[in-house]
Amino acid sequence: MTEKLTGGALEDGLQTLNGWVYDEAAGAISHAFKFKTFSEAFAFMSRVALAAEKAGHHPDWSNSYNSVTITLSTHDAGGLTGKDIALARAIDAILA
Picture 1 (spheres, rainbow, N blue to C red):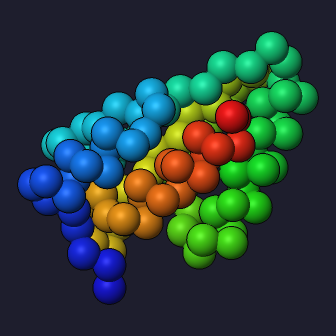
Picture 2: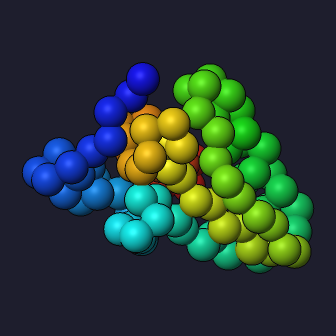
């Protein structure tokens, strides 16, 4: 099992992310993405799905027209882990 990030490791991981918001109570990070059209939002979700499948780590997410909200947490660890930080970085790279 992957271990939950705490202390300096948590802070270091969060500092490498672009626009992700940490919810300490939920033990999760989230990001709301906005696109010009539904097609752009759906294409982004498709690329994220491929990255998530490759990582073996899947987001909680929702889509409404041109908006995609993604929340990452490792449920079996009870909070944020290196898997979440790595997938958030991969998602950030999709948009770079």
